[in-house]
Image 1: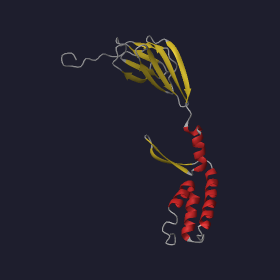
Image 2: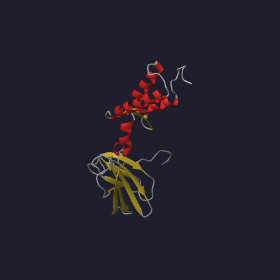
Image 3: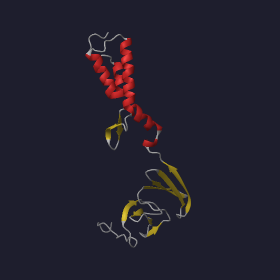
Image 4: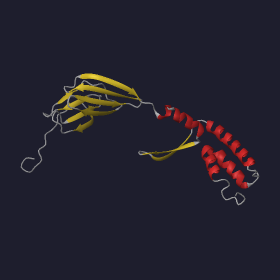
Length: 196
């Protein structure tokens, strides 16, 4: 503020730089970090001058910076791996480390889920409640097997299979797989007056 009016100083960008992201920080050693459209990383010092940092290309990824007392850490997050670059306080490269990120579709849990469940229900913070159908038709084979098991269970209980309630239970198991099987076991013949 100068005499009650804001004092504004124009920032001069390096030649030919298009700003992709400019993050401000009130730190003793710098005021801002800038990512350019060409993938370069610049640091704006207290004198408002930009200095290019010796870091790899940042295009197509998410970048995070942590400044410590003795070193700086730059984290580059790609869709399939994450790389961390460590520099000293003068931004000279010390070391880097890369860790691969397995996507959810590559896990054994996902592959078993595709076979056993006809659909999945997921709650995510960015998409909310989401229903997704299983890929492939292996869940149909599981549903047919579970329907056969339900027929055996109903015969052992001496329930007639021509009863509309028993047929409804079998249809629920055939359509909804594991979900239907568990539901029919928990509430057998719901609405059937002949079930004890």
